[in-house]
Length: 615
Ligand code: SF4
Figure 1 (cartoon, rainbow, N blue to C red):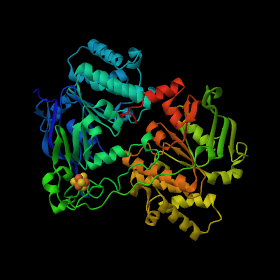
Figure 2 (spheres, rainbow, N blue to C red):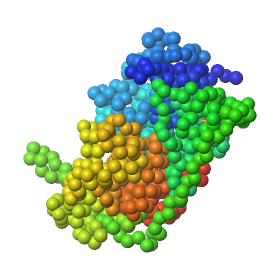
Figure 3 (tube, rainbow, N blue to C red):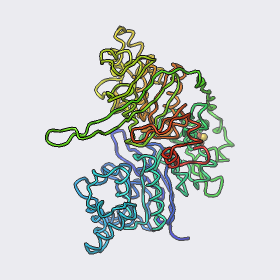
Figure 4 (cartoon, protein in one colour):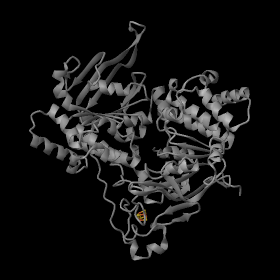
């Protein structure tokens, strides 16, 4: 058997924190063969990124190794000197990150940054290094590599920057490439290009890859082996196809069931109650205890070991330990709750709530000393949309297609340049701000990043009260407080949340606060602008279920702006596809996915990574 490129043996990477030692990676073992793609998946805080940073030896400050080995081509990298580690990075192992702009130096050209890596690791003349750099830019599919060589990173798009990062990472033909969420920040079509590119280059160079992602469809299509991490440990390890066909660990099963897709439309998504425990406070036994639907009497106290049921397929769960299952410790603690169906009004019985006709939003381009208008960016260029009561219209498209501007224009957060907006037959377009008050309480917006949209200096109670003071001035203080408490309860937060600040909540809880803020003023229409895009898949499932249930209870209409077509399949009754400021296709969700007509829709759908038939 040839030596694997990477062998991680019982790795422990810990951090000293104010709350004690955080066991971010706690006894992890796996290996990657030459040319293999190994995916590590898990929610934020489960240890996937720390594992990657340990392998490339970039653990800093309060971090330390509590034990184990990382063998790269059979040699342990942990005891190497800093000089040897620098030599190893870029040469033997290199890494690409989620946000390429933060890894590229804005003051140097693309060419300088590739040359720096080549000159550091290879003995080449300046002319040969330049030729190699240009060749590398060509192999990452830049049609004009010489021009890109002299460009600065800020002048490139997100997808182009990620290609530059791949060129830098692969220019010294490393044995191992680590890709940590390499496509998360990119549009779906660019995502597809980047993944294909990594695959192609990896195959031609025989490089092994460690892919870290929360996108399970990406894993299904690209990895040979998968490790699912939970609480700093491997919960399940298996060949990719076996894991997706027959997941064993309850955490993996829950993760797979929380993915939104067409098959789930009729019922709420499965969710994982609670959140990932902090790495300073793990249970003595199974770290998934407390959240696991199959938990048994002894799970929280006795640690499950990775055991195998089929060749190559391991799960760390007592359910697969025949000795444990014969003891009283195997008495189930609870049964999984019944999932209730969601019933919604048939589409043909819904009346029109909001209508946009010929809507335009143009931004002037000004040039010269006198800032004369020389042209317009047509962000929204004459679109027609109809949103029905109690239903969800998804607006999809890539970044820059104009969908967010369209959403904001429809609720008049941005002034339209032309066209009309109607709310229940009332013409809104020409109303002044003072005349818009009723509409403002009826139409709300929920943003992608709840943290930056919530004022960090105000308590949650004050944040929600602000909206009530402006839009419901008739309520006295007592009524306002009652309204805030009941709305928080409706989104799954207790009344105590009123006294707390946004930073005291997790990402999913903050998004609940964002929803409560919108819901408190009794809206009829909500624009959800990438409202679940920044959340882990299990938290995303909780928020999608919440949005669906408040839609059912309050008869709300949603304009759901998203680039995630899995989410669209789950939530939307109709879909409008936007491209370069125009709607290129608009139809019922089933129809759009089964029979797309416009070439751009076909391209968008073809770029979505799929798992089996229905994802
Ligand atoms: Fe659930 Fe127990 Fe298995 Fe842990 S060991 S995953 S708590 S059944």
